[in-house]
Amino acid sequence: MDTLCMNCLECRMNYHDRGCCPELISRAKKAASNALSSTVIAAIFMFVLLAPSYAKSATLVVEAGGMGSFKTISEAVKNAKDGDVIEVRPGRYKESFKVGKAVLLKGIDNPVISASSDFPVIIDTSEVTFEGFTVEFEGKGFSSDSTAIIVTKASDNVTLRNNTLVNVMYGVRNLESINLKIDNNTITGVKEFEENNRGNGITITGSYKAAITGNKITCCRDAIYMEACRDSTITHNDISKCRYAIHTMWVDTGNFSNNTVYDNLVGMAIMYTKQSKINGNLSGGNKTHGLLLNQTVRCEISGNNIISNSKGIFIYNSIDNKITSNLIMNNNMGVHNWGGSEDNLFTHNSFIDNEVQVKYMASKNQYWNYNYWSDYLGWDMTGKGTGDIPYESNTVVDHLFWRYPLSKMLFASPALHILKVLEKQFPVLEVPKVVDKTPSMLPYHTNWKELIAKYAQYAPAQYY
Image (cartoon, rainbow, N blue to C red; front, side, top):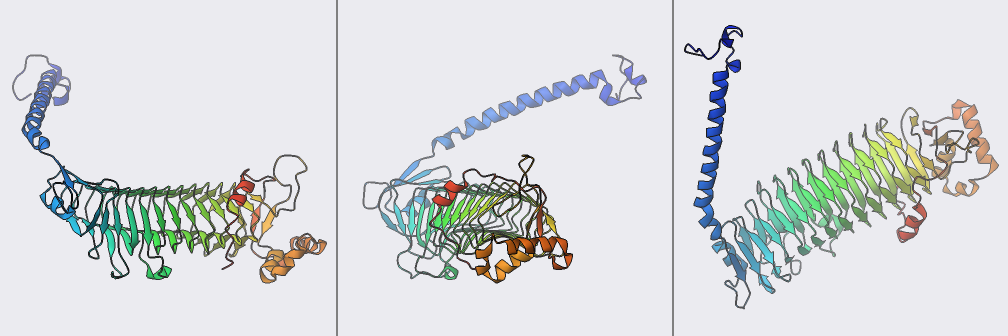
């Protein structure tokens, strides 16, 4: 203490450590208690002071040609205050507007905003919810840059929910926002345009914690395109008839799971992405790749059903990924592993009835253990559930199949079995291959027959 204290003489023993002085500790507790009381009083005062402003929040009703307070949405937005609710009654509203206030725009019974410009809805501030509307472009007289809903830079905590966007070039575009939520919307592009001439359903750049869930997207260029984003959640979306269903570039620590992507050019293209989850997706009937991994690092890829694509999984220059428990079935090529993608864990996957199970291009063997291979010709004499001899893909016989497809008619012939034996005995015939030392005798996916029947309408396009 600064002055002589006779309460105790502890300070003489602890070298004047102020943290051990009972008097100073007592004073600190009193000061903290007083500060807390002051904070509570100030909070109560502010609540009382601001209570009238909350009471002033209102519901503004828009009804075209009816009894509402406003005839147009633009007029209601202009007169609204932060915290207000703007209810828009059924009808067709041919207008465009910018939302610059933190309001809830709520469509009742699905009012239609008929685009009167290239950018009918612009959300230009944070804390806005836009839900229950149809936004449509009539004809094709809009520009190649037109967008149904724009969420401007740094407009945070915006929610787009239960909307229908029709005949759009771009559906939703956003730059650098936090906590953008796009839930349960239906987005349809211009069906008459060729894939590359359309815009994207959803385009997000530089966002943090975006959540895109439960949307149905069709006839776009890329249904969902994300670039330089972090901590995104892309789940439970239904995507068809697009160029790329889900396309990521430099998107880290994301969750791309439980989506259904089918009848696209490419199912999911996860590129320049790390530490993300790609789990539980169905990728079926896509004309080229079901799942494309390009420079994808330290990701979890598990529980996906990849069925009837040209290539099931294409892996290029991607390492340290865990690829487990996937059903890779009825593709022209199950997995194409290329470009230095040698350090990935492949285990407990079911490779069933792919014309070519694995195409592997590298300088040394790759070991993928504990997978099921429908073309495995080995046996299990001890009943342990795994084969007694290794499974080898990418063999000389496989190369014959790739070069001369009709030779598959001789799949079970003794001649091919002899050729496989010769390859083992004479290394001069060997090519680098995928080896499974413990191939499973039974598929890990017991429902594979039901799934192949369910998606029988999708046939691989044989683009590879």
